[in-house]
Length: 361
Image (tube, rainbow, N blue to C red):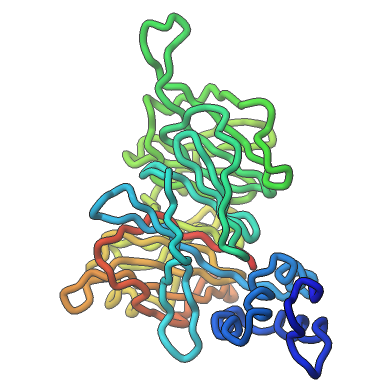
């Protein structure tokens, strides 16, 4: 790596030693370090540097956001949650990163240090170490309504579209599951067409992975299924899990969490116990901060932690807030939450939340 530097990083220490030192510095300091010299800027932007961090076991969870402009409805921008020490966190646009060719039906997931985005037919990947993007091969079948989930570094796109039937006289809804292998960067050779009776063209409101299964439900809450990838098998979702209309949920340690905007509480579903509970310790905080929020998004943020994003009216202006919440399972099975921070991270009210993903870099 040092051979790629224009000049030594430090005149008094070998480059390899400096690299190992910088690798241990929290990423929140990287913008400042990049100002030291061109060599430091190239170092921090180098994929090899992040491989070294990974080799040393020094990785961090970072949250990226896809926001959509309310003015155009077609412009999507890519942001990073910039975590600062002793001051407010902020959502900062990644350069001039605009997600062209993505649409309101786009789906986004993360695998390792990459974010993958899929629209009706096209797809792209964004490397979050270098903040560069590149297209990947097109989806094998047109999918206008779909969700994306990850199991064992494979991305499962579940959805379909209206296509001509066998007679060609009229269009019928065709369901399918397409699988993208992120290690080989290719689609599996055979498109899986499933006989899933989910009505005509469901619009999935949310989907989650728990215990190796993909759980899906639609906006009407009349279609709710679980998909088992290994056996390519569909089954009805557990009735207890479907009891609450969870949307904007995330899974932490195989427990599903979502913010109930009506009751203003954080709820948890434990698949092993097959029961719902309210996360203790957050009632007063959520009652104040999310009193008028009609939508929220939770995202897993490393081990035993989640981040909750929600709209809020702040002095007459609509803003996006982020609360970082540590989770703890106490004796007896009760789940408790502790608010670590809560900041206004985005102040331009002309943007909607589309998706939040956590990456490891």
